Image 1 (cartoon, rainbow, N blue to C red):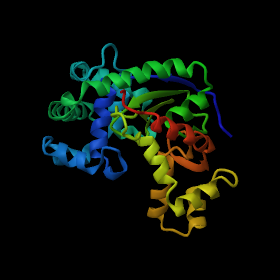
Image 2: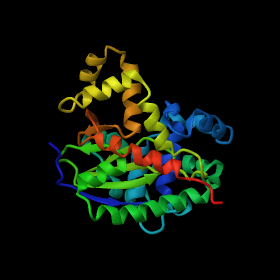
Image 3: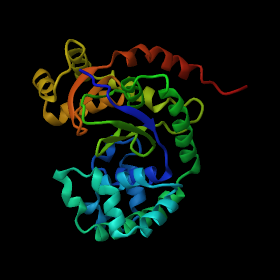
Length: 307
């Protein structure tokens, strides 16, 4: 049963994308991201500190701090605000959001603060400050549009549409904060901050006339594989299924099933049913995406250069 006892709001800050871009850079299966392993390799040439700091990186506290940061939240403004906090102020800001099982995050906050400042400053100088400003303007415009959009939707509708298929089934979340993001495309990035669930949802990059939209490519590619079609047929035939259910049905290896479900999920063909701790609990077919395939394809065919 889908619970809707939460509220939904939309937030954009360049500081969110600062953290998400570094998180995407450190993301192990980079081939799952639109930017891909080639982007990681290219940026690594500039961000030479990566190997020293990667093992310690945990984006949870940074996501929480961006969420709590007052005023302007450009990369520079956020780093300046973070640098000015005392360890006591930092503790007051984050402690109410950290669950007991993650209490280790609150130990030696001064050292953790210094580490994150060095890491983010280096990342900003090596990469983020060179990011095309059009990307940040597009994310800001998406946030403004989405803010108006959610006013006419139920919380569940707003979350499923933005995330192309995430369904929250928990009474532990009071607010979902939708954050448009570029670097983690086509994936969503979830972070639980107390009773607030911060969800970075993908926004497509600008593209030239005649170039297929990435979402159209994901959809057509997802449908072009027999195993994925069989899995989709199975998910459409009953209640939401667990990963183990899909594994037993398909007869494929765990890694292969995970790969196929990720492809179906990225294409918007599958819903993921989340627990309150951001864990994917079950999967179900998302027929609405198929219903919109013809319109997406027609839109692309009509996207002709001006004479």
